[in-house]
Length: 372
Image (cartoon, rainbow, N blue to C red):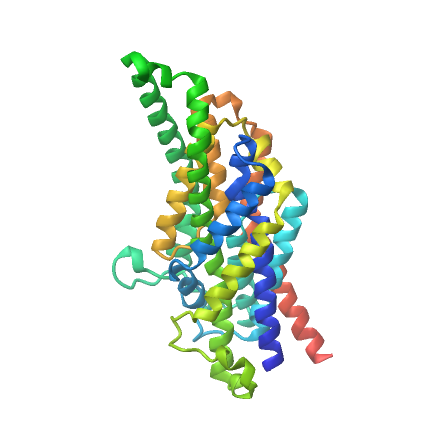
């Protein structure tokens, strides 16, 4: 049993690494596309900010650990978590190979739900659909923590991208009309130079926001595995050098070693890069200039930071993709390449059921092999 728990922790860290290079594009696609930074420089910036962001709060990790699966209906065993991670990793690698910016967050959530359903013998009560706690920001369940943000965050990204772009144009137009030094600063050459520098800040903000949200999802999975192992007595067999794995707090606490490990592994994954997706995000959807990259990154990072504050495991991919779409729409609705957007949307739609289906089948296969 202890060996299986350690395998789950290792698999979770593999998912975190894959998440890092799969979602690197979310943080740096625009800053690379606008040629403000080279791919290597952008990866270093993103990895550093991912690392910092991962230490800022654990609300999302707590949602994954205790807000989606009803442990009174189904036991969240090491086998369940291993299959959940298998589903998420498999779908991430498939979409990475195809160059599609699908959601690692939804892949993990889909895998967790699929494995839980298989373990509960198709009892849908194993999933927490909606649970009122207090005000809506504290509610648990798939409805409040997954599906509402899954719909609202892309819409918010699109609208906020347009709004920031329009606001920036209004400021530039006002400067041009003012005459003198302000008018000179409103010229395209100076605007590009300014936002080339400003985009360094927005790209760093995006990397930070990515760390606050995505790194925490794997923290939640590892915490679930540790809590289940403690309840089963598996941690009683821990050798002295692994004593740090004993939980320090209750089921809603995330231990420091989990936070530090996940943060470092995600940063390492980010440093590995994900150039296939960068090409789709930064070049194929719409042609970007520094001012557009600044607007898209600022819009997406703001949404991610707010979601992390409320413990909502939203998709970094969804928010930055739709922010880029919003900026492109504000620039010229006809500039958007809808064939690429259509492929991305289909990847979004399929992610939860596909990852869930893979995890479901993996657990059934696991059970079948056990009885052979």
